[in-house]
Image 1 (cartoon, helix red, strand yellow):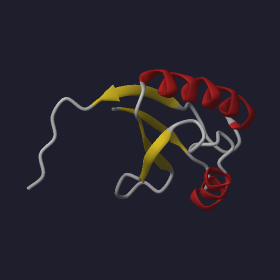
Image 2 (cartoon, helix red, strand yellow):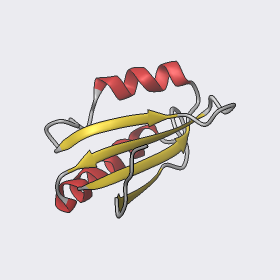
Image 3 (tube, rainbow, N blue to C red):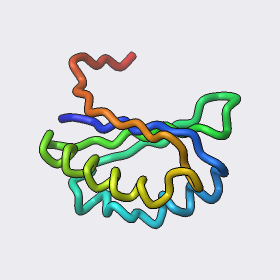
Image 4 (cartoon, rainbow, N blue to C red):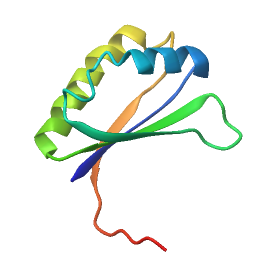
Amino acid sequence: MVSVQIEHPIRDYTTWRVAFDRDPAGRQGAGVRRYRVYRPVGDPSYVLVELEFDALEAAERFIAVMRGIWKQVEGTLIDSPRARIVECIDEHTY
């Protein structure tokens, strides 16, 4: 399993969330198994999104789709988005 980690500043969380919930990338159809949205404590103008995939290829395709979406909204809704694919190499629950 791999995850795509996306992070970027946002102009307004409520507006960003409405756009995120519209799901222009079609997360489920793109192979996303689960996602989490994070926001740094004390910084309401930044978000981090983690999306889990079964396959590396699906994660790579998803990032390509997101880059197209970002071109349409960068500078208005978000700024300087960053994405990377990571794999979990260890996990433990206490």
